[in-house]
Amino acid sequence: MMNKCSAAGQVQAGRNVVVVGTQWGDEGKGKLVDWLTETAQGVVRFQGGHNAGHTLVINGVKTALHLIPSGIMRAGVKCYIGNGVVLSVGKLFEEIEGLERAGVEVRSRLRVSEACPLILPFHAAIDIAREAAKDKAGSEKIGTTGRGIGPAYEDKIARRALRVQDLKYPERFAAKLRELLALHNHLLQSYLHAADLVWDDKMAAYMQDGAIEFEPVYAEAMAQAEQLKPMIADVSRELNAAHQAGVNLLFEGAQGTLLDIDHGTYPFVTSSNCVAGNAAAGSGVGPGLLHYVLGITKAYCTRVGGGPFPTELDWQKEGTPGWHMATVGAEKGTTTGRSRRCGWFDAALLKRSAQVNGLSGLCITKLDVLDGLHELKLCTGYELDGEIIDILPLGAEEIARCQPIYETLAGWSETSVGVTCFDDLPPNAKRYLQRIEETTGVPVHVVSTSPDRDHTILLRHPYHA
Ligand code: GDP
Ligand code: IMO
Ligand code: MG
Image (cartoon, rainbow, N blue to C red; front, side, top):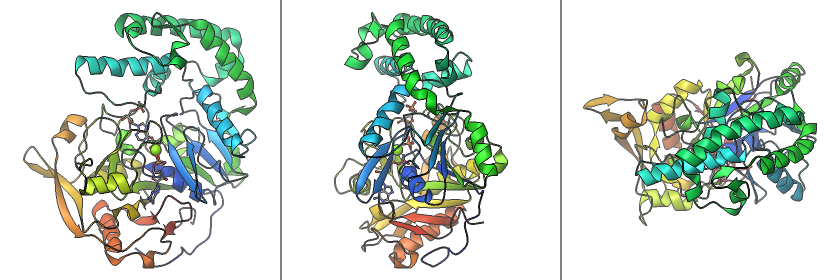
């Protein structure tokens, strides 16, 4: 780890960076994407949907983004929604209109892939009804965001999804929609007993006897299509052309590695690949164009929703370290407002994340939240069925049986809030960062010390060759 205030070197034209979450989401990806966009001219979302919630703080003003890439707050930056994203056009326009009210011009800078599968009202209805059914049966809920993400990806993989390009052809759209409704309404009415559930007014407006009706969904989609048309694009082609022209691209991951459908704590995961490799498939560029992978990593761990969490603390009991993280870190979800569960930093989990993402460097966020804790624990491995292991195993049941092995480090009482130079950090904070490097095997290249865009320590610039 170098000891300096700014990273030497020069930005390399045509160099591209992938930003991924290395834990269970909410690591601070949005802040870092916004900050890094000073050096990028195009920002690309490649997976997930409006289950994501990315908070940016610029000059004290907060902006929450769900679908639109976090590069939108920098004038002139182009934003792309790649084919790997499941798109609710209604939610997209809600977000565009919110930004426009705040004086941000969006429409001329946003390109949406015609290959994005659509999220339609029945996807959210199925998502919500399934979670309710699990609850009723007494089985552990996934704790989804209820946005229809899983059901929309199911339709994509089953090769029956309506996609953005279908919006251009009303008759084709209507025929496919009728087929989808026949299938999904059968599920909603006969299997999930949707008529017995209480629906909010918005969803109720599409429903009759627990089934989603054709007319309101179709009419709404056709009205939205007219507004969306100017933004629909062959994103793969545009990204490749931008690269040829020497543009620096930034691929913005949503969720986090432990929520990845393959590599996460299955089945308590989201329904997409959140790992860096999917930046290529989810946007239509070759993997050779992904030059650097920045793993955004909270200085402790949080998780929203159900599923195992080996280093989880009691975060509700006043005065405990978990409570300190939850309150000082304001750990409430950006999308659903749910409390985030909190726990110690897990280096064994990070090892899996480093492996499946091919991390080039780490960005440690929320270091400031640990100010004032006199002692910190760091998990270096687990005991699983009598054996010692140093990397997170696969699958929820195995992970739930892991007993964390901790080492203890001294905390610090000084403040690190707003520090922008590594040398100005409290000595014990520097030691903590060094221990993170040693135990995860990944160098720390960036450190974040407050929600604000400018409160960031740069050790090595991802866009420098
Ligand atoms: P994302 O989903 O990974 O983009 O993260 P979220 O935006 O959902 O959650 C991260 C939260 O932490 C947001 O409220 C950020 O404003 C805030 N945040 C980001 N970096 C820092 C930091 O270094 N210190 C503190 N205190 N807050 C931060
Ligand atoms: P960002 O991009 C944290 C979690 C949900 C749930 C699981 C499945 O802000 O980091 P889903 O609705 O995707 O089917 O829910 O995934 N989840 C997130 N947790 N941050 C996110 O996004 C998340 N997106 C989904 O809480 O446990
Ligand atoms: Mg978030």
